[in-house]
Amino acid sequence: MSVAKVILQPRKARPFFGRHPWVLDSAIGQIEGEPRDGDEVELFTAEGQFVARGLLNSASRIRVRLYTWQADQPLDETFWRQRLESAVRLRKILGYLQPEGAERLVFSEADGLSGLIVDRYRDYLAIEFTSLGMALRQELLVGLLVELLRPRGMVLRRERGTARGEGAMPPQGPCWGQPPDGPVFITEHGVRYGVDVCEGQKTGFFLDQRENRLAAARYMHGRRLLDVCCYSGAFALVCALRGEAREVLAIDSSARAIALARANAELNGVANVRFETADAFSYLPQLAAEGQRFDAVILDPPKFAQRRESLEAALRAYYQLNRMAVDLLAPDGVLVTCSCSGYVSREDFLHVLAEVAQRSGRTIQVLEQRGAAPDHPTSASCLESEYLKCFICRVE
Image (cartoon, rainbow, N blue to C red; front, side):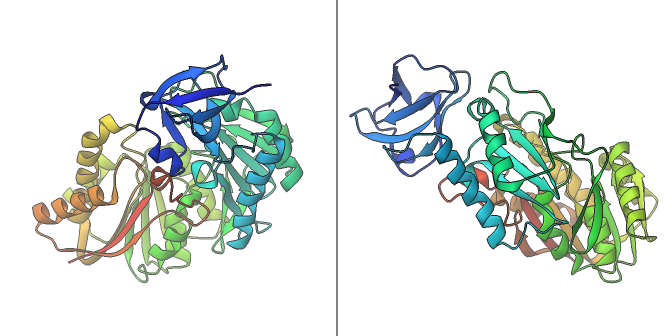
């Protein structure tokens, strides 16, 4: 069967020879053939030179997602198996895939599998499709994951907004084997957590902050810590158990998250961490009005910039949150501040901290600029795959 051809506009081919995987609608001149959404297509320059092969979606601004730059390599079962094997092999190299552990096995563009995310929680896999082309290959991809990893069950997850504009996507729920009948208990850095794989935020746990939690804990000995947007308590518990923080107050706006966090504290026998359901933007000023002071503050808010158009509003929100945190910090306090908004660059985030320093009259020194854990690599060809910023700072 012949494969349809997507012809680029003149002078639009350079990024794709550089292996960037997203072909936007504005780069395309014409399509030869009548491909359906999700079909394999070949990408050519305006002069007729082959560039790459990918999957088409006429409903998406990312019109074609590219997967191979070899003209003789079809996107068949063998290809997808090799890509999945490569992703799993990296996690083995990193020392992950421990029996009681959890990690991201497939990270979309960063693993050459644009539109597919796979997380492992012990014997269970959580799968998320962020492109129609990959979703239409669900049966094939699930079968290959079963072959490679032999899980007990798989759950399909959908994070709000991640597949915006992709068209009809499969519903959330069990998609293979036996789904977990309660929390899946994992161990990270010697701390145990119960993970809600079926209904929890993201795929149940913030795996990308794995190494940042341990890095933050190194600064916490004997300190009074405020953990803001704590979700299921991972930063708070690592800082209490591994970092030997003296006292921890952790807040989140979700009562369900706080219930998970309290259960995790009990699971680990931690008594010096208090969890409260509270909105950060109203609760932090209340703490300041009460004269409360902390030796350390951790900020790990949700994604403020869901799209490029909301960047300015997001930067204002980051400024407000970080300013409130600095106002609560004692001299020589530690600020661990994070942004998971891909549209917010490291430079943007540093400018936010510079403005906070200027307006608060405090000196802020950035001690560490960190990103996501190694199981969330960055593709050198797709810098958009870098999204997480985690700065550890001293505030005089």
